Length: 94
Image (cartoon, rainbow, N blue to C red):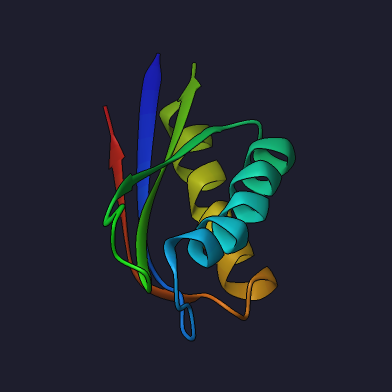
């Protein structure tokens, strides 16, 4: 069994309130869950308007599958969400 944890540090340019931030992050979180069947939550910079840290978790029976699936998440976010800037990503496999 392997557990993968991917953290994405995002910049949300032009965001001027927490309400706007939530309205821009919610569709991303829902789509990640639906597209990749992973657990997703905002975990840091909760009170910052223009920054967010999203954590994605995946449990699998194969570490290679876990790593490849979470790497595809990074590429998918970068390709499909041009209004968000991916500052950093970190992948850990346990």
